[in-house]
Image 1 (cartoon, one colour):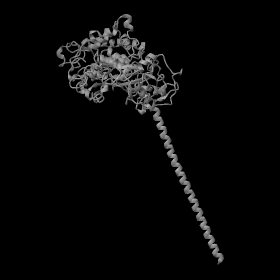
Image 2 (image 1 turned 120 degrees about the vertical axis):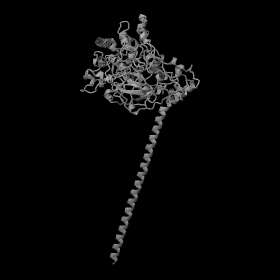
Image 3 (image 1 turned 90 degrees about the horizontal axis):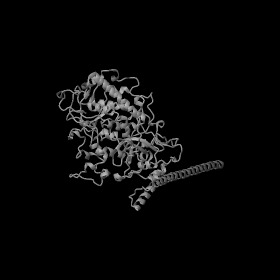
Length: 622
């Protein structure tokens, strides 16, 4: 019994020891877990603290140079403008450039890439002799030194590298003689409120950036700014882009000798760029640039050199858009006296300071990179040619481009889009109806709005304009909705012109050869431009000398203009021989009609030389 009792007690003690050991093990494991949890939490807090310190240092590094500049500007009385350095010596390194150039027009430089190398002394910067991206110190100073708020006299003007070359050598300017010709002095009819796009006293108040902002006023007239009796700002003090909008009427985008256009062209080159965004839609990359005076322009960057022709195997709808074609189209349109292309000027743009540093479009900003040749590149987003393989690269960070002034906002001046009757199929194998039906124009003449008024004649003007450029991409056109069907066609989007100087695309002239219709004013001007004393190619050469990117067109393209002009006149001559002068040429120069003609309707069957009663009341010639 004693033995059994001892065995039971020993068993109890053994189990008790097991329980105590298990308790100690569990307690130890619990303590270890607590220590691990505490250490892990402390580690997380430590990581968070390190992250916050790094962010604080990053912000301080960005803000310190700006604060130093403001303090230096306040002490020196310059109002914070850091302009002591010579722009010609401005570094091309992105990181250094950010610190030394400072913010432009008060716009924050949101993004900074510090991973880019200094390529200013690299021999492989890929500069070519056929691009103006390689500029001298003086030229660079003209294009870079832009201080917002300066008076017009302090602004850099458009560089005119060949200004007066021919005029000084011979004492004769073909352009001046052309614009002095009676055909270029025909007055417009008197304009009523219905003939102007805007009423200065009422509609301009609707511009959201303009209303209530004292900074939008034209700096050129800052000292003589006047105010109307009602307390509004006088029209002369509007910025040039707004004065351009105010001048649009039923017959023209701008006046023949309007000084605002030359001032606007200078603004496109000299105004500081405050923001950049990609334009939605379209097949190729285009950027919307906003200026310090709230004006906007469409930027088309350089994709090809001037010597490159469109490859023969390219379809017209996949061709590159050329920046120099947009510039040349504006000058050609003005020489033809159409004045239906918005003002366009060439500009050298700094890709880092004027695009990357001011854009808030993250999709655009993310596409910037440094090429193997140490050039700054980007490609954006679009349907065609927006990839690393088709990137737009500076030399090393300067890129050419065209800047086309914006038309009024669609909320203020609606535009109607029309399908071009002679639109191409935009298909690799199919042909459009007009390409297989020689009597296609007879059907068009019976279809509104081509059955009355001058819309069909305006399409003939556009056809001649496109053929001279070699532009096959005219699928639609636009008009201002306010003026109804009784107004001119706006010649927008001319980037696919001047692609082939060695080939004349005769299919562009099919509308003219099928319809055999033309305005008398257009016909007479074409004959005038073919004369030796004027000569279209020399007029274009002289006009393009004014652009910052001169030479805009190479010699073969200029010579092609004269050759194509002779082709147009030959087609019209054949039409006159077939149908008679009165059956082809519509007289829009009748007494009282003026250059633009009255805004009334004319039946499409009315011809030059027909009795006056054949015209419906108040026929319009343009």
